[in-house]
Length: 116
Length: 115
Image (cartoon, rainbow over all chains, first blue to last red; front, side, top):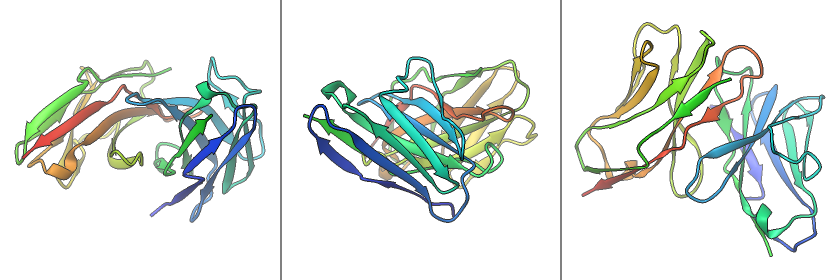
């Protein structure tokens, strides 16, 4: 089956530094990747949609300059949290699809970010 | 645009009983897909079942079945013969077939199976 690898699984960083999270589709070409944020005991909130080779589309209220998304190839998307602050601490999870609804969506295992 | 609503924050069920998790959705688009995912405490998202808006039959996958009532815009998940390992968060999600095809989630239901 389709597999998505997400790294790192956990990261602790100091306030003011940047953190990069990688999302790789291992056995399929992901035309579209999605990034979600999840606070404790809450649902997944879609942050942005990225298509290979084009700029990401951010959801309303998501800071583009804070959360940089790059989808350089059909198998790799990265989320960089820039100048991280404690309020950016959260669970971030990516999802990838070969072609949307008909192919389904495969999720990475998530990254727990803690900013101290 | 699409919206998903799950009105049960928590459900408690005895082991071996069946349980129904509610999900309603709202969209004016006729072409869409409905999904259910399970999220254990580890955080991973486990795909359970899918229902397309044009599917005539209700979807089934082992102990999971989806009670799809299109006119009422509901897509309830039924888990038969619940097991202790079913304890987790359950999310209903929806994607439109046209456009960006982004997957939007409901608020989730925390299911606890009691021995």
